[in-house]
Image (cartoon, rainbow over all chains, first blue to last red; front, side, top):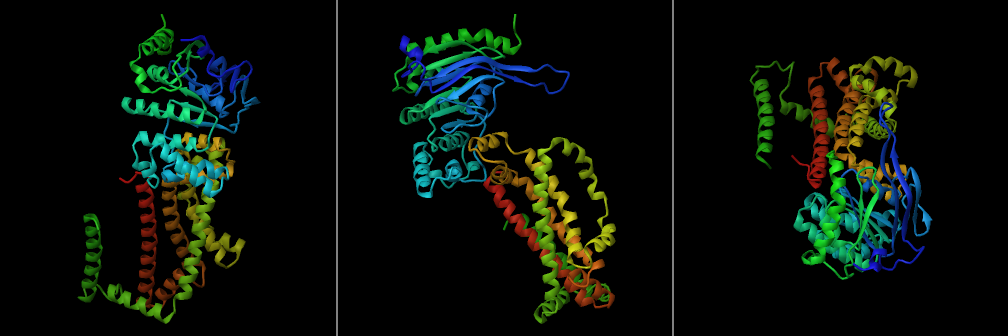
Length: 278
Length: 251
């Protein structure tokens, strides 16, 4: 682990691709008798251009809230969010793509039309749409399924449709909220490889929310470890992996060191989240 | 055709054949029911002579108007009510008990308001169908996946295009329930209204034939209504099955 990797590749002072400063999120109570829920923060985070950062934390620690705030899908209670130098204020900025944990494919559209969805909404012309959709389908290994409906595909393939749908918009920042959570272990490793290839080929900045420590360790340049609710960063682990990497890295001795450190940071917090605080 | 399909055809054909036999053998008085073959022959005669075509056109256009109004109006009202949870809680018991009201009691009022025209007939058909569509819409909107709405927000879609491009197709399996009911209720509302407050249309023509002891004409018209309602429902059923199969929802 080198010091340069801690800062993230290509990061220079004041040049973060996206940044959170003192971000908090407090949910109002469901009724008057309950207290408000302090879900997140305060959180500071800098995402360097082209960086692959994973966020791990115990369940209910506000990871998904963090992602939604960064995506502009919900507004922070306090603090500021910037993307490419402009403030993100509860409305999704251009150039940010999100892949959700749930199956977000539209069952009424074919795979091709699902992937074309965002381009058509953005008014991209038909020829350009066709070119980009065909390319994304090829990239995700879905070419033979262009005319199928999502119901005819496996869970892993549906998630690939959702990734392709995000990918065609050529986002500069890709946010993934436990995208492989519903998949089996082998599929997850292979999807991880595809994600790394996508990251290298597009040069996009990636923030991956996950609860799988090995997934975080295998894919990322840096891994932020969050505390139990209200979620804060309690550790930031740099892996120092080369940019050219794939799932075979799990056999590397350093991989064990990274997961061990993640778990030692996380163990007490996970116990808290389980209510086993003692 | 599936085995269930063949059994279905056999049941219907058997019932028709039994009625044919019973009427031909004189077990049923021909002044009460005429043989199905006679009904079909009378209907063919009426269609060929063109005698009932204006009535058919009038009734079907009124049914179509009532149907379109109740489906479109029910979907729009459903969207509005769904967007206002407090209004919805206030309306819930009213919607649930709506069909306890016999609408036909309002027909004198509708005549006073709209005059003796097609309008009160369409309004009764609409009143019949619209609430079934509202309830189906609310049901469907409750089940639109939240993640689909997030995708809409990321694509920066406004409320109107979100409703049309995301919510409407996402809710379609539930909307179909409302659409099928709206067809049935539009037919019932329009034809029943024609019986009591119209000078034209199939309902009026049946009542007229009945009052004139014109059994072949009356049964021919009833047969026509039966066949057209069944045809419309079969088309809807086919569309629904295709939609459900695409989504992997066929039982």
